[in-house]
Amino acid sequence: MTLKDKVALVTGAASGIGKQCAIHMAKAGANIVIADLNSDGAQATAKEIEALGVKAIGLSMDVTSEDQVNAGIEETVNKLGSIDVLVSNAGIQIVHPIEEFPYADWKKMLAIHLDGAFLTTQAAIKHMYASGRGGSIIYMGSVHSHEASKLKSAYVTAKHGLLGLARVVAKEGAEKNVRAYVVCPGFVRTPLVDKQIPEQAKSLGISEDEVIKKVMLGQTVDGIFTTTDDVASVVTFLAGFPTAAMTGQSFVVSHGWYMQ
Image (tube, rainbow, N blue to C red; front, side):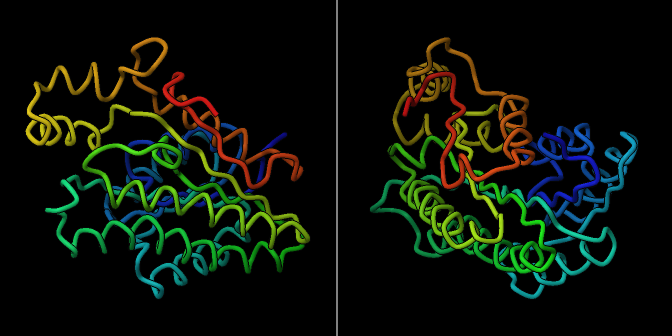
């Protein structure tokens, strides 16, 4: 399994899990496209990745904009020749009790996680089909693709939805060698998670330390946060896996928090 000379586009890749996925795939030989709402961050990350000896470009992309997504995929193919791997990683978190959840925030959450996954898939898969080589589409799910937690109605709904999308893509794409997967991390200590700690402490009426030990890590086997390296290693493995043996499946990376 190799990613040498493949082209991988990662959304939300200027930082966090997405950036680490891009770095891991670059080390495996892939040329990388960093697509992020943060244009400066995307450009800076692309320069970092070029130092690893591969080609890299940074794109400004709002994954909820059909025009920006289509333009970004076209630029990828025009500049690098193909798109062989899509990692749909862009995401945010907003927490509220369901009776207080602003409808605008609900729609924003679903737009970024689900509309973004659909739009990038639709744009990329056309090129994967046309190339005759197929490709891999990897969605960044969560243990919340399988489990529910308080305060996360929109997030849990969106992450469950990615399972359905991946399974349809796996069935539709099989004839043309396009595989689809959902990688489902547990809690990863990123700025997104750090932001949740005081929010959940306030909503649940417990201390921040209790949020970490009981809510986030209480069901793990070792009391350890999932790392960006943990997740990126699985993404890179799936990106390079050459057959449909595992297509349509989800892969939980959670230090035993959730076991399928």
